[in-house]
Image (tube, rainbow, N blue to C red; front, side):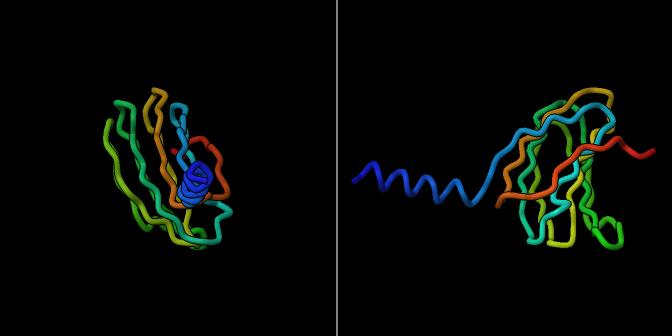
Length: 116
């Protein structure tokens, strides 16, 4: 019975959030939450030594609502509303890895080339 209870608690805790390692090619952007119809939070950890850019964009107006640089080996938390997408931008010529801990499962993820 104790093992069943431990499994149930583990299942509940892990279903509330998800963790992913995101690898981003040089001069590419990872778009997160394109098809998401609810808000979510993300803790992003830049595990590389290169600075990346984080941008949250309103899906209707395409205006940036949040944006900042995230230096290597550091982390930040962002809140993304239901009408926004998060963009993790790699402006460098090196591969980077970002650890993302999301408050829920997020729909709509893709890569795109950086716009000049």
